[in-house]
Length: 107
Image (cartoon, rainbow, N blue to C red; front, top):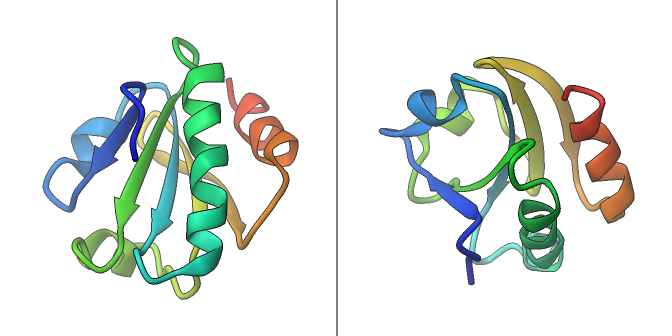
């Protein structure tokens, strides 16, 4: 499923991966229909933003600690981090251009 430009985050590598630059994180689960619909969009953005921002996914069922820290209650949830700090949030489905704009305003 994941392209070579799309990172997979876990509870153990999350802090290291988001600490520098701009990172878009897709919080998702296998059973989530809307997550499966937004997944290909996130993969496309990983290619389009390569070299400017990191794009990553975190499975909330396999990694409950990070979603708990950010009070993720609904998925898909997209969070943008800038140098380790939460910079933006989007919950639910959204068009690719809206997600891309959300990331680019933090570059």
